[in-house]
Image 1 (cartoon, rainbow, N blue to C red):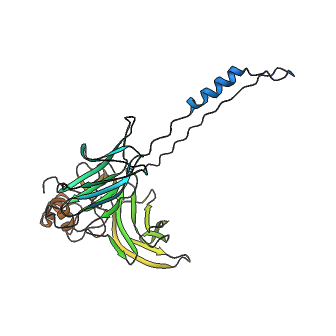
Image 2: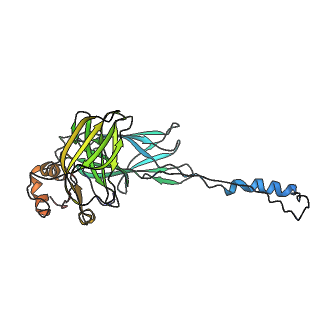
Image 3: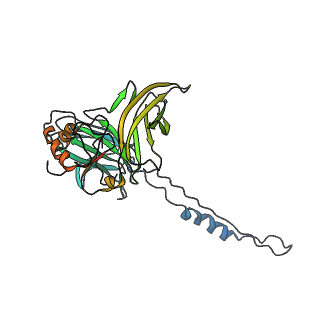
Length: 321
């Protein structure tokens, strides 16, 4: 999401190479087909492989990121077998690991991550010297107190953020949970959460259908709102449906669809998530809940009541708390 920094916090690579060796037979009137010389056949067959496009190398990826309150962490993922992978914090290398024959790697960080927010990515080095950077990023927020569970969010451009761990789990009813509200690079809204595996999930705003999706086999679901979803405050409703279309769980909460100006504003920002409060946001950003007044003062035009903020709002977060 570029500069958007979400406190909860895509690319499908397709490679196809087509090599074709075509022998043209020139005919003149009723003449028989002209024979193709043996050396031309040989040359054509030998040249064919050079016409094929080289397959694109899959980027390294995160599977597991677990960070304890002290900041020590276990990070695991996938990559090209026999390559090496570096865990990066911005442009700095934090640790490296060798990728095994199965394409898996594990890094254990015994030196604690610093408090505050840090963005992690991967840089894979192949035996031939080629380097491939991950399109995924993981944002980790370690509280100053080192006494609470750090927030860990997995993100990829154009996709909903996935909360890997955190001090809150969104809002929900039974198995149905709304975990995150994000905005993609074009400013469109992305909702994501959990439901019963393979259940249908629909999202409504002011009783108007926004869209419908289906949870995967692990119970995770994502839905991107269509274009034309205008800025404003809505009554958001999320339904879980069974195979007969009956509603089995419902979440209802206020939601604010931010304006393009709010999404594109410069500086550090946070997208308000389900279950957030100014106190909780300030505690994650600055280590102290009392610093919520810093966020309130910077966003007076949006916040009428410090105790009443909506998921989807985009707040400026001054660097100095």
